[in-house]
Length: 287
Image 1 (cartoon, rainbow, N blue to C red):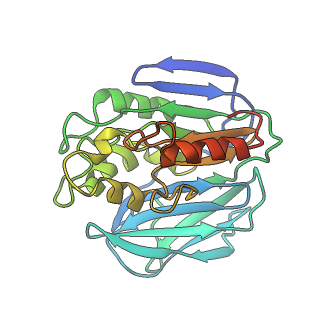
Image 2: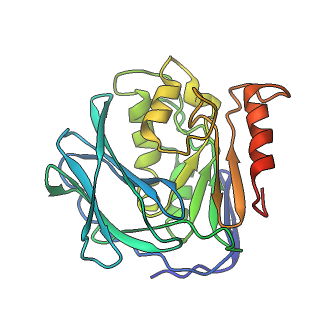
């Protein structure tokens, strides 16, 4: 188990690590990835009572998440399968959970355990009365070309993140270099795999990441928003047609808002009006 400690870490590449409380988090032990696994399990929207777990394989076969408080994995939730860019993305929404509680989980496709760790947990969000928690904020981690691997700076940040425990991560955008590409080896989906899911693989297995749409997400073609909303499972509380492109959520006593600066946010715009209403409706201490 890793304990959280009060500290503030400043490193390059826009990484801010804020540790505000103590709490347990399971240690990840990496094993050889199973055949057919294209994207390791990652956490999407996480609330006090629910979590979304997703992964991608080369198989469209039936998939599921097995989870429990211990390592019996006695609870089973079926995943929804969707095919994007010739890859099968699996997503399971687990509900009825207890706040601020760790659960062991494993993911299965075609009856095979494709979990690339010997042990992994997710932890639900804390109650609104919780006064402290830990989060990471980072951004602009894109490589220097659509076909290039992550930069050394991005690799260094990811490695540093693996050495710390935190409850959630906020990414301010610019994950792919040319996110609008619709097909081929440099498609939006492949860029997200190389520059996001592979890069932060071990952190994303037990910690929810909340990204924003940067300008590079939309460069170079018409598939920018499609690729972004296909691979992420984020709060859908924006107006109809803008779901996941901007959104808000609560964590402990804080209210977070992720905006899309590619869309108008000037006074009177749809996004501006939504933001004003969202902040007025929030009762969280921190906004």
